[in-house]
Length: 338
Image (cartoon, rainbow, N blue to C red; front, side, top):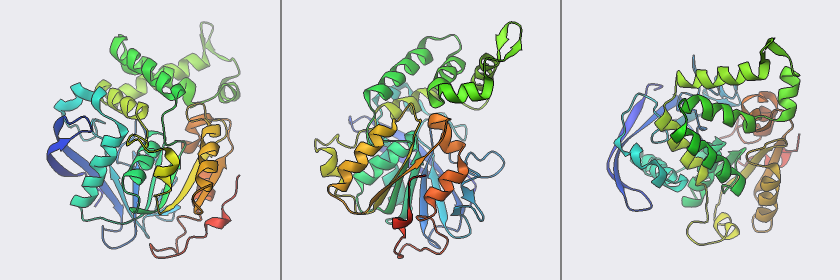
């Protein structure tokens, strides 16, 4: 079931009414759909549906015996339109700046309907995938028993929008757009403390600091597996997260979500600031009982969700306990701030 599969959309209307044709691709890991509780995972900016295996980007969290156990769950992952996975050529990418995170949530919702899936055990996603998780929960308030946004909030702040604006300028004007955009992004995916701990002003040679070599490596590495068009699209989605598009305030939207919302923040995140997550948690607690929050402690900033696997596993354990089924009562009271 891990092979790339697809659903054809001959006429899908974006929120601005533009119609596109799209082949929505996805992979399923673990139990076959319909045989076990289903987990929907929304991938991050340079991620894709290949979460486990040789090139899997979340092997420490998903797999046999891992916290999201493929012996217990069906794990479903859609590819965001335009992310380039599977080598698809997509004509609509020239309109990338017309897409929003809500469009992606609507497309995923329709994909679930095409697969006859109307109830999920959980929706989980990190970074831009966490934003899509918020959007999908707002769009379908009864869809999931648990909603788990990691290192992401329900809206793109001015800080996020500003960084995405710079990224878009780099992607459209640089002579090496992928390399330069990636190097810029790495400076706010990590922290000054993380760089100091890793490099401490050491040099690769008399002319270059190790931090420079590391940034160059990440820039060049991305060009081997990603496309400029994909980066532009995913950056646009990151820029447009906002569950209040309908005109209702956040509290009014969020209190309609029936599932348990478990926010996971990172204390040093420079992209989606932890203060924003705690403010979201406080607002939610005023109208909703089944809300919890956990915090990863790390010097590594936004990327800590890909680094601090032990902490993340501990924070996810009450939700993805191996003994749970979609009808169980989750022991979410066990969650603490670590």
